[in-house]
Length: 120
Ligand SMILES: [Zn+2]
Image (tube, rainbow, N blue to C red; front, side, top):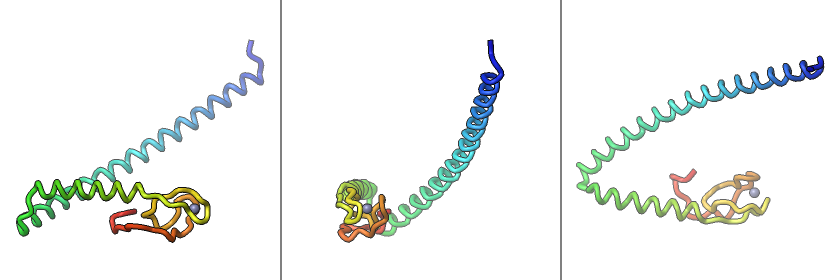
């Protein structure tokens, strides 16, 4: 037998679960919309990159295999820059050495190394 208090508690839990489900549904829709915009933007940037590559390769004579080699060089360089760490002088956390500020406390990092305009 279910008493009144248990019954009310069950309804309250059900309503809370419904609210959580609706919030999750809204968040999913918002995230899907953001993903669609990002995919569209990435496609647009990819088109621009390809068009720029066509111009550069025609005007300079740089071959596709030279481009592949350079891509590997960039991948290696990014990997190396991302692996370097230093200790934040404020919070002592280990942070990437290529950052301007500590990602944990926001302290300005004095020991920044090998910065690149393409780093975050
Ligand atoms: Zn810090």
